[in-house]
Image (cartoon, rainbow, N blue to C red; front, side):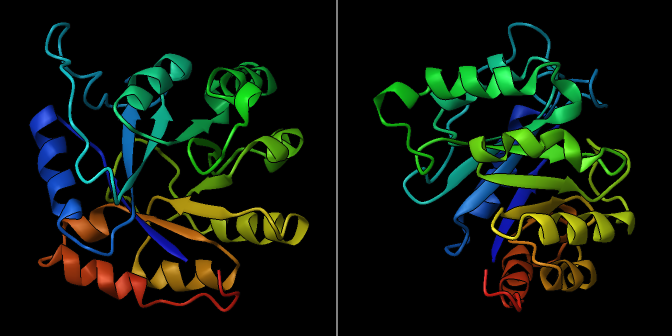
Length: 234
């Protein structure tokens, strides 16, 4: 089981400060950065919220230890991959509702990022995110091209601190019964209570934002999440 801290940046400074918090926790090995364009989901996050000319580059801390996952809640996902990959990000999550031709996008990206020269998922990999109301059947044909499936745990994506939508439990249960070998992660509304239920249903990764950042001691809260064990041993 992997706990993935999530950051939804309102500015470059906000991103740097929150990344510094997680980089200071030795056990953190993966961090998700939420990218919201203000069109596919809203409100816009940094860098979409910044005026042209203020969208300066950022250095991702502890790249030797932390893998950065970019949650692409945007319509220009392919362009965003290029920008964040140049900064060292290695995991990219696409929201199926934002893509018109998903198989074509994944094929194009795999070719661009090394499929012709021994594409290595451990170096750069892709996941697909599904909103609560989206049918999982939409991604059936693409499962061989991705590392994980991300189920959104909240009805309105792009905001942290929302209540968990319990319809996700059934979505996860059904998907796991059909594809037990496919890693699942859940993003949004993850608390200690929901985490235990999700792990019992076979979820591999817990993406946790406000439950860590709003804690009086984020490191202690992270350790508490890490202490939860999946009955499936994932």
